[in-house]
Length: 165
Image (tube, rainbow, N blue to C red):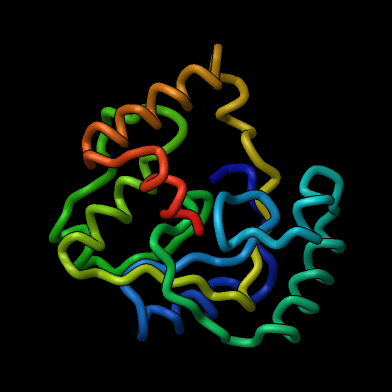
């Protein structure tokens, strides 16, 4: 995304994680689900680059290269193997600008055997919704895409919620 700050070493950590997973993402303060770090969420809009770098070091010291399998990776920043694209293609354009395209992508990838992972000690600061909030009636678009996602994957509301747990 255009509203992220990537601290020193972030890409090396995600690249290393591709040895264990097919799609990988970092921790952040502005992301749905398990990748979210509450301390960083409180400061999502006001941290400077220096603040992000300092937090990234603390986070790396705390978690190192601890990785965890998760159901979906936040789309603000992720890395994937080319074989995933070769097998399932690109984002579904029906989702347009904003929400659920990455969740759809991860669900499609998992259905054919790919594994999503979270690198806890890798932190990328996501300021959040820099583009999406400029969309007229972004809440309606989010709701429309959520319903589209549920319809495509034949999921209930509870099924969708479980993707982020």
